Image (cartoon, rainbow, N blue to C red; front, side):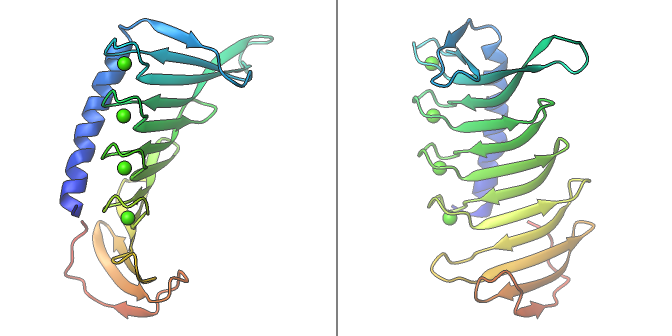
Length: 197
Ligand SMILES: [Ca+2]
Ligand SMILES: [Ca+2]
Ligand SMILES: [Ca+2]
Ligand SMILES: [Ca+2]
């Protein structure tokens, strides 16, 4: 699957995700007994087929604003988008219930194809498995304006070579090849013609 097709799935998944999450609010919540006792697990059966589709992991923490009070905080949410019983999206949250990481299984094969990392609520890194072989082939990093600043691509999984691209103000600044996979660029190319993809 090429880059274009891969990223045409993502907005679909995201819109379906918000629809499903909205539906969950109208569905009765069930509490499940977690195997560990330091958190509670709430589940929602959005399509009402008797199998949970959304799992919310909640822990109790001391409320820093109110003495002797306990707050319930979500730290993980799992979503089964296609109702096949397997989780396709996992979201992780920090102590302020801010998203810190999202994992997506875009082709529903049980393996994660896209990992997104957030800092202070902003997307800073995407790790992408374009060919759905279970191995990450592209890593993208973004600045606090949401602009792509670095893209590392492994063109061929058989070879330990990586292609590095650096961007300034959304435009490619320099690119080079790391031939042996040690993280250091061995050969720089200077093409200013390319636009980010
Ligand atoms: Ca269900
Ligand atoms: Ca699923
Ligand atoms: Ca997958
Ligand atoms: Ca791959």
